[in-house]
Image (cartoon, rainbow, N blue to C red):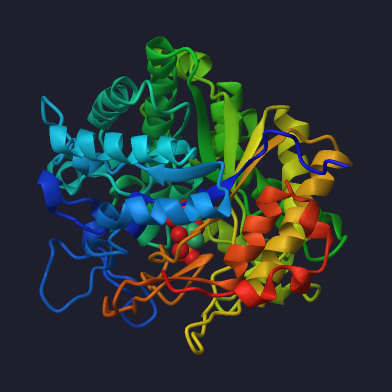
Length: 490
Ligand code: BG6
């Protein structure tokens, strides 16, 4: 019995600033992520410029800019049908507002996509994965400024024209809803180049920036379809949904309302208009935004073709604590879920939550869904050049079984599963290398030291088997899967 659809897109997902390195090569400009340090104490810091005395993980990352031909061979060996990469906006428009694009940047991605095609790997390309040009932040305050819409659409058109023959699947903005977690300062900065000013209404600022991004995304979808009607252009939002702590209706209502924050971007990008609950919320909070009729027309006509989402974890809502916290900071205070285990970074491991997520999204939108990120960040230990990452296999296996159930038992139209970080890469939240997600180990430490050598982990062979059996092997015993082949240096 075929457990997954025949053309299911098995693959992995990455982002330019987390893999490429070569941060100034071939005339690339600085991106916002180039001034975000490795975590110092408990969090990453944003510096004004590149300053001595800090470690900036994006500068070297895993050097994919130079190693991609051999890295792609490894993905091919695993049988990848697709790979999600992002285009660094600052490679194409180094400051963001040049009249003409940087040909060297265009060429790099052309070569990359060609190489992917040679390896029979379908590119899934994100236009903006947390790394807008720093120039736009300095000149105009990032996405606070309406001008970013035009500049982004120009960038999108340049890419849509340049890679017409090579790319079919696009995504506009990565985790576009993350900007709403505005109290965690690197998120609005990564997402939109926003640094808050003393005393300003953070919620208003982030909603305004989000509105401009929605319009930019919608206009890009419209332009993309004009350039190539075969393009399939999706959105991408994080969907780490919430459970109620109890069956107290107060908890339930609060959970329902807070989950809207997970739906809101899909509502706009799939349905083409703002949902009534958000308009009411703005009214209640006195949030008035710069939104004009043309914007609303763009949203209406620029709906996406498929829904991309990331899923890592779930959280719990407790009305005794969360309502107050939510009003003040927009952050849902974490409540432990006694039914789940947690990763070393405190993220709940919830495979069933993925089946729920797929159903919640499919019931609501009835559109093709692509899981464009899911995975386990863990510390791997290399023992005699081997990495036996059974914990990762266990995590992925359990999640994939739930994906299969959502497809087979619930009828969800899920078109792909892209494991996050198929090769170890820089962590977005901490800047660490040691928070590893990969099937392929990269010999690099948090401070950038290490040979950069790639080593296949046990999960490499496991995922290869999953792909070659189109998911059937998920229902066997992991120990039967080539245990002896684990871990080869490349
Ligand atoms: C998503 C991002 O939020 O989660 C990725 O789109 C990120 O860029 C991933 O890397 C995992 O998060 P982290 O913090 O473990 O790297």
